[in-house]
Amino acid sequence: MIADILVIFVVVFIGSFIQGASGFGFGLFSMSFLPFLFTVKDSTLLVTSLALVTCMTIFIKVYKHIDMKKLAYLLSAAVIGRVAAFFVLHYFGEMDMLKKILGFVLIGMVIYILSQKRIGTRDTPEKKILPLSLGFIGGFIGGVFVVGGPFFVFYYLMVSNDKYSYNANLQATFFLTGMITILMHGFSGDIHREFIIYFVIGVISVIAGSRLGMKWFEHLSQERIKKIASVIVALAGLNLIFFS
Image (cartoon, helix red, strand yellow):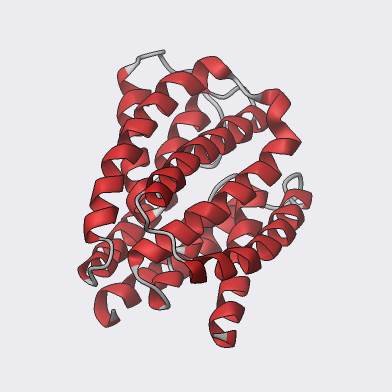
C-alpha cells in the first residue's frame, strides 16, 4: 500500500510537471506506469480525475486567452468520442489484453509526437471536418487510455494565435471531456472506496508538479521535455506489450 502510494506520487508529480511546462503529457506519462499497479480501467479513472485538477490549476493561469470559436467544433466531437469510450472501458476495462493494446497506443503516440515539428502557429483553412475528426478520435482514445491529447494538440497548434491561446483551449478541452468521463463512470459504479485514497494523494502531487511546471513554461525547452518524456513513454509501452 505504501509502495503504491509512493509510486503514484512520483509518477503523477512528473506527469503534472510535464503538462504544466508543455500544455499536455500528464495522461500520456502517467498511463505509461500506473497500469503496472492497477487495471486499465482503474488507471484511466484515476489519471482522468487527477487530470481535472491539473487542467484546472493550469487553466486558471491562462483562461483569459481562451478562444470559444476554435474550441466549439473539436469539443463537441470529443464529447461524443468520450461517450463511446465509456462503453468500451466499462465493459472491457478489466481485461489484461487492454494493457498490451495500451502499449501499442503509447508507442504510436510517441512516434506521432516526435514526427511533429516544433511548436508554432500557422494559418489553416477553417474546415469543420478537421476539428470534428480529431476531436472524436482524441475523445475516444482519451476516454479509454487517457492518451488522446496529441490529437487535440495537433489541432490547436495549427489554429491558435499564440501559445497562451493554445494552452487555454487545450486545458478547457481536457477538463470538460474528463469531467464527462468521470461522471459517467461514477454513476455506473466504477469508482470504489480505495480510489478516493489514491486520488487524495495524487491531488497533492498534481498541484505541486503543475505549479512547478508552469514556472518553467516561459523558459524550459518544450523540445527537450518532449524527447525525454517520449523515450520514457516508449520504454513503458514496450514493457506493457512484452511483460504485462
